[in-house]
Length: 150
Image (tube, rainbow, N blue to C red; front, side, top):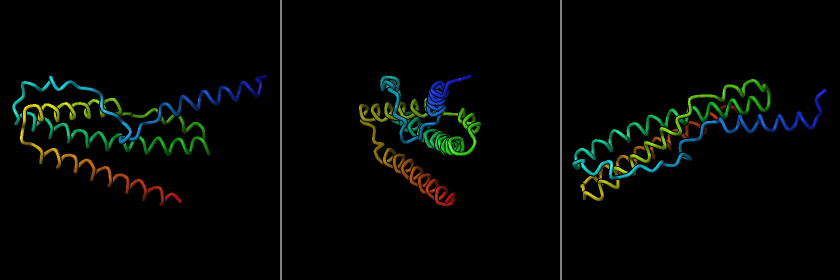
C-alpha cells in the first residue's frame, strides 16, 4: 500500500508539471534577441514593410496565445477543483517561442530603422498603438468572461 507521504509528493510533482505546461499570457512573453544586422542591407521602404508584416503577425499570434492562456486557466481551475483529468487538456498549442521571436524581430527592425535614419516614426507609433488597443480589448473581453462566470 502506498504511503500518504508518497501520494502527496507525487501529487505535488504532477501539479508542478501541469502548471509548467500552461500557456504564458502574451504580455509576459519577452522578446528573444534578434540582431539588427539581419536588416542592415534593407532599404527604409523594406524595413517599413517588414515592420508592418511583423506587427500583423505579432497581433495574430498574441490573440492565439491569449486564447490558449485563457483555455489553460479554465482547465486548471476545473482540474484543481472538480475533475483532475481536465489537467491533461493543458497540453495545448503554446506559441510563446514564436511570439518571443517576432517581438525580437520587431525590436531589431526598429533598431535598424533608427540606424538608417528612416522616417517611419509615425508607422512605429501606429503599430504600437494597434498592439496596445488589441491588448486592451482582450483584457476587457477576459474581464467580462470572468464576470460572467460568477
